[in-house]
Amino acid sequence: MSGKWRIGVGGFLHESNTFLGVPTTYEHFQAASLTRGPDLLARWTGAHHELGGFLDLLGTPEAGAVPLLAALAIPSGTVSGAAFERIASELLEDLRRAMPLDGVLLALHGATVSQTHPDADGELLRRVREAVGAEIPIVVTLDLHANVSPRLISLASAAVAYRTNPHLDQRERGREAASLLLRTLRGEARPVQALETPPLLIQISRQHTAGEPARQLYDGIAEVMAWPGILSASIAMGFYYADVAEMGASFWAVADGDDALARRAARHLAQRAWEMRGALTGSLPTPEEAVRHARLAARGPVVLMDVGDNVGAGGPADSTILFHEVLRQGVRDALVILYDPEAAAACAASGPGATVRFEAGGKTDGRHGEPVRLEGAVRILTEGRFVERQVRHGGWGACDQGLTAVVETSDGHTVMLTSRRMAPMSLEQVLHAGVEPSRKKLIIVKGVVAPRAAYAPIASEILLVDTPGVTADNPRHFPHVSRRRPLYPLEEAVWP
Image: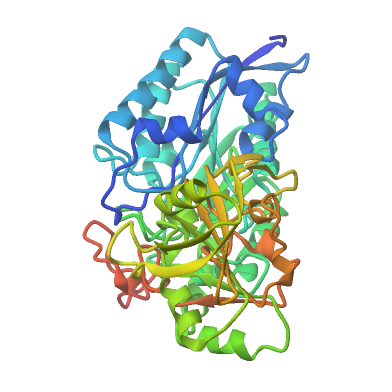
């Protein structure tokens, strides 16, 4: 490492769905991505991710990266207490070994929940701050779906959230955070920040930042960023699949040494959202309505977003509710991807070209439909490894969905069976197996907004569907206990 300033670089990212019964363990992070020291640099240098953005601005004569630990896991249940303590301890161990440091860059999520610490992000940051002291600048990045605590904002010198959903600006936000840290070290900026948390919940189906109504919110960021003295501004739309006190939308601004300006900018962003709160809620078509629409569409493919099984928010990836409706209405030529390692293994045992009969999907729990009985021919088997080279939601490049089988069913559907849960962020997920999605009549995609970057270029239209499940669109389906009250639209609320 070369450089005048030594900058610690680390991360701990997990989107925790507290309504899932199975906890996320240390092994889940190992299976996705857990790197330390030089391995962190090898894994994230050049990546379309905030960690890649951090590293873009380091390794110069001015500053160098001191790699710590970076842990990521696929969105899933609450992080076990043991997993949180182990990851936090390893990161702090690396941090103390690296001291002295001039600054720290941390990639956090903002919606990480552990069994022992509901505000896991805030707790991790508390430990980092305690280790480095009050004077060392710490700049963090957060996911757009963060539930942001006042503690996190008070402990960070500055926080920067993604501004796009799908998350296509992660690397850019990492560069922004690193730039802000370097400006602080040069004495060019004295960041102070303020947070506003109006009693507001924004439904997941209203969170597409390139479309209305969310675009109006993010236009507000550009407006505030033009104010003299504002260094950064952020909106986090929240994550209502995590039952925590901070759940809901949050707005904050970073100003150059001016607390009042930061408060005014944060309030401006929050007020804009509060005034349009009615547009940030709504309803979606039912499975029956959505499939009927796709059946009658003049051309395909029609992409049906299976909102209740959003893998990117912790969905099991094996809901069959929409597929059952496709079969009931007699629609042909659909493409569906199901997580079912048992069925994939059975197809592998039979071999390519074999005729198979089996049940697929609906096996994780009882909330996402019954297994579908299928008959067809095994078209292809793959190891499930593919590479996405374009900028896509999540910043992933190399992907691994495990042993994968593609079955052409006797009633004209293409069913991909995976052995690992994989959020549908890349068309390479199906292209690597020789499946051409653009030729299908209908595609069931297990997401809401995030898969748009991949699927919008080939879709005749995209339709979000009100499917039940652990990631359903309607927040009233979730028995929150710990969230703040009142919270619009669940209750009437007055603000400010």
